[in-house]
Amino acid sequence: MKVLWLRPEGREIPSIDGIEAISLPVIELRCLPYSASELSYFEAVAFTSVNAVRCFRDRSLLQGKRIYAVGPATAKELGMDSVRVPSEYTTLAMVRTAVSDGVRSLIAFRSSTASDSLVRELAGKVNYVEVKNYTVVVLSEGVEAAKRVLASGEVDAVVLTSSTIASLVADSIPNGTAVISIGPETSKVLTSRGLTFLEAKEHDVQGLRRVLEEMRKWRTG
Image 1: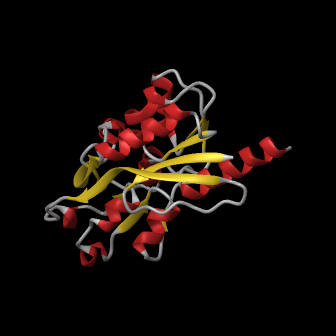
Image 2: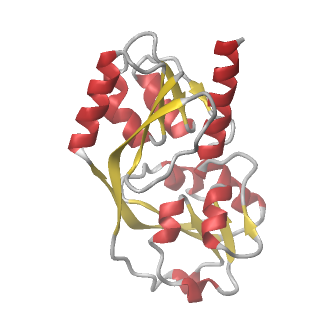
């Protein structure tokens, strides 16, 4: 079984027995300058991705704050005790967890390309502010290479690790190629393009790994 992984630059993919992987970087995540001057006024801080943590420079300001992470990988990157992780690894579930915990003010660090879904969700419920501390840059050569691989028909499946990546290649995925989505935001893009797909139950690389392992079992009987 041959699988195309489309990922951000610098991210590793898991090795899986019985699966030949082609790994192509199609986006690059870059840190942005930001101001943390408002952070002291908020009781809770949320990180929406591993990269939001990597681009956060003010860890000393987290002391005494309630900390939320979108999933286990993000919590691990923080390397702190008592980080709250939702049972479903989505940004929406994360902020809903904060609200159910009684949080009244929340500041979140996320991508400059993120949607306004959290702003809409939290309107009228809590004092909520977003800080965009990283951005997504498309790697055109990687995208074109991915489209060539897909067009060749040489892969059985393609793994899409973000909604941005999905939007870049969705229209180039041929019939008969299995599509695996990392989570709800990526799946929304695929649904809008009329594609069928499998979504990882855990919205991280390990969740994707489990989907591929199950797929390999189906194919080998």
